[in-house]
Length: 117
Image 1 (tube, helix red, strand yellow):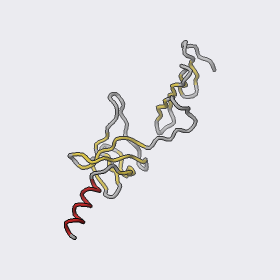
Image 2 (cartoon, rainbow, N blue to C red):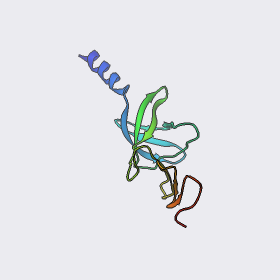
Image 3 (cartoon, helix red, strand yellow):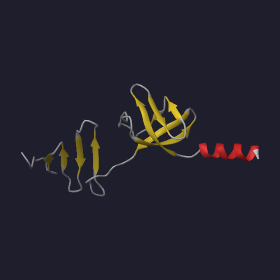
Image 4 (cartoon, helix red, strand yellow):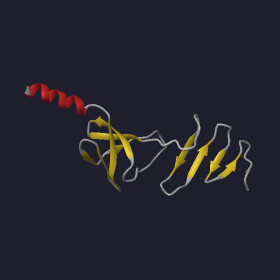
């Protein structure tokens, strides 16, 4: 009985878990079944972010505890195939399917011409 409980608890800890950021400064802390301090955060090369407190994240096991592999996407009004980069302060860049870019509401068409001066 003890062995089967121990094995099943170890297996559970080896899966991805949803969590929430509980501390976000020079040290990331995230919690799911356990609170983890000093959590590493991974993103594609060139992207850097510090998820704010309360942000929903996906945690996976790593050699040093758990690691954040991303935040929950809220698609809002973007269409399939489009990309939005945004900050907590409201700055945003949207890469549209028609080749245009929306920079904080300013629309630049695919030829580089500002459409909504």
